[in-house]
Length: 129
Image 1 (cartoon, helix red, strand yellow):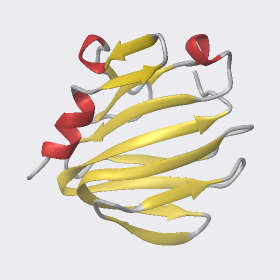
Image 2 (cartoon, one colour):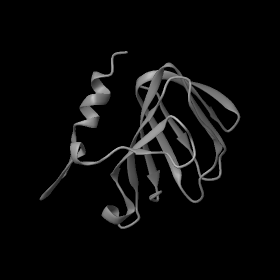
Image 3 (cartoon, helix red, strand yellow):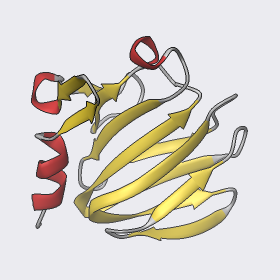
Image 4 (cartoon, helix red, strand yellow):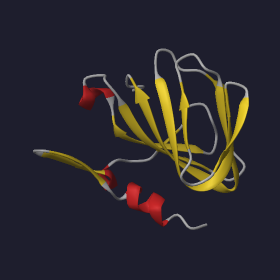
């Protein structure tokens, strides 16, 4: 799998005037519920005053984030690398690099990685954690 773009995010940084945060310094953590799913919490509620949070997500080949909702968060996914599918409000979306999907609050959604795995940039408004 070509995941150069994902690695650029994995080793990238967040910059605003007067502040920078290196993503290399942020550890990967296992998802508390879904096997084969890891998260890198790039920006959290603590850093944004609860306004938003940004997360890199890697889903191992053949693994899934099963049906769930967020309330009150709106969630977006930007597919960086790999392939898979998302069931968003009952409709199937092919997840390929460059696809962006939006899940409003209280909308059921699930994500399934293909045989290459799936790499996403997920954002939550307000912050998830």
